[in-house]
Image 1 (tube, rainbow, N blue to C red):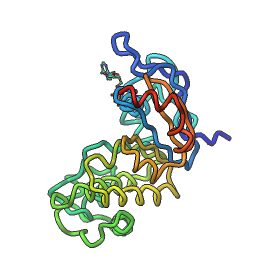
Image 2 (image 1 turned 120 degrees about the vertical axis):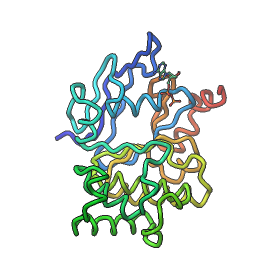
Image 3 (image 1 turned 60 degrees about the vertical axis):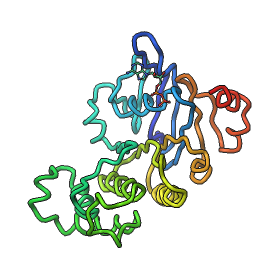
Image 4 (image 1 turned 90 degrees about the horizontal axis):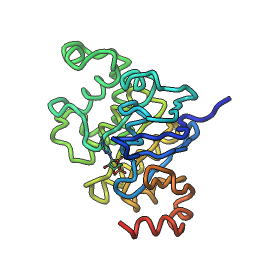
Length: 245
Ligand code: ADP
């Protein structure tokens, strides 16, 4: 049985001949929490784009749960079980965190429909449980627009989890956050990692140290090295690439 949640095989993405990803081979196991780092321009965003189907490989294959996703649209790939968290939270600021989560719990309905209909008791219960998980129970009924930046990030992570994805992609979740908010996000991801496969793109090395078991370093569109945070940090190739920035 294939226990890989995600594999990229010799994936190249060319933009007018420039290879943003260059023969990229990557895989992660079901249940793994992986952090991908790399200097600016290394290909991290393109990597997420190619996993989610926003960008199609020029060459190579992307396998999600062992399945080649080449023929699927971005929307279809999301429905297969990939939840992507962007850097800027995408939440409904004029609704409460509880309402945001209730909407996310039933992503078959659209937001307007959910707003004008009462959530089912299952959706309500799931939303209440998720509020606890993301540490926002005390703020469940204020407007989401009044939350701090870190709380908004946690709410959006909760909204993704509400959709029960098999793989959670999280793009720089702690950019611009205070140390305390950063630690909260780290603790949340560690808690979620007990029951989810999670791929995090991150710049903040303190944060990477907090959450990472295994780190992949991207450079010029390829995997430069992989290993524990200590192995990666002491790798002369990684030091050279970062010092060269
Ligand atoms: P990172 O997220 O690691 O900073 P990106 O994936 O955004 O890197 O970009 C990798 C490289 O590909 C960069 O040199 C970038 O300029 C280039 N690139 C990304 N998207 C495009 C595009 N749509 N057209 C042309 N070049 C692109």
